[in-house]
Image (cartoon, rainbow, N blue to C red; front, side):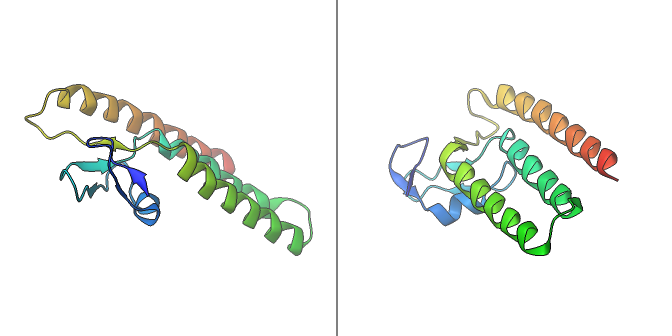
Length: 123
């Protein structure tokens, strides 16, 4: 279980953390705060997806490719659980909402620019 960043109680399950994202949030059972992960977590996902696209193009046998894919998937899951922080999504009338929204727009723009650059370079 993970601690809610709002009330510091262990109410966020490990499986819930895996399925939330910057846009999709869950509600803490204790304090009803909306909890998600920051947009910066998408950079880890982009790296994972880029590796998944590059590995099959390597000149190795099928078994080695499958082992690399499994190892990278396990590493992604571990890094996601260990280092991606949880954050409270502020509502419109709360202090800091505009600052959080501006930060999210900047991070989302950087993420989508990076993602489309990777896709363009890999094709």
